Length: 272
Image (cartoon, rainbow, N blue to C red; front, top):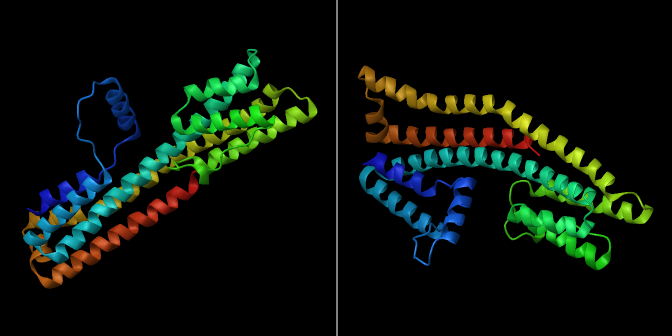
């Protein structure tokens, strides 16, 4: 009974991948007006509470607390990995959008029209930034970037986007003030952003081994429990059936969560 409760909690709180979310949005937009049951944070919290209550009734409060720590460790590891992937993707999208603006300008488009064209082809979070910059350039003659604090839902890569749009604004102002071709100045910005994106991809690839090693170390206690059960020592019964074992189970699960959190923090510092 404990295992289904833990699986239900983990699957309920498991975040959807960005690609799955985008495909779901496209599918919902293309479908007819049929009613669909959509996942909401409130629904996830209710399901988690129900699973926790079932676990308390079946295995006791100590085991429930320990199981909650383990589920939190799994979700934290997955969230850290997904955030790293989204950060790398955001850097690539930033570089591609700046390159698109440079290409449009070199093809003869007006800078504001080039920015608006790129804004229509980029992801929503990035398109809003480009449209705001285009409106500012059209009204004031010199664009300004949208700060992260103005975003309703900051996404991975928002800090890097602030830096990129600040450089684009400075390059645009420099071109307007001194008559330098804007495409050439923005091309220098693009090369710098592309170097940052390439560095982020390389760092993420080099961190794969560290993440895999941390995951293996986190799973070693589970392997020890399985080996003990295979030998007939019954460690699971001790952890779940005795007061001392329950305390040890909670302490071990808390240490697991602390280790995963520390690993996620260390690996998260490296990426931009």
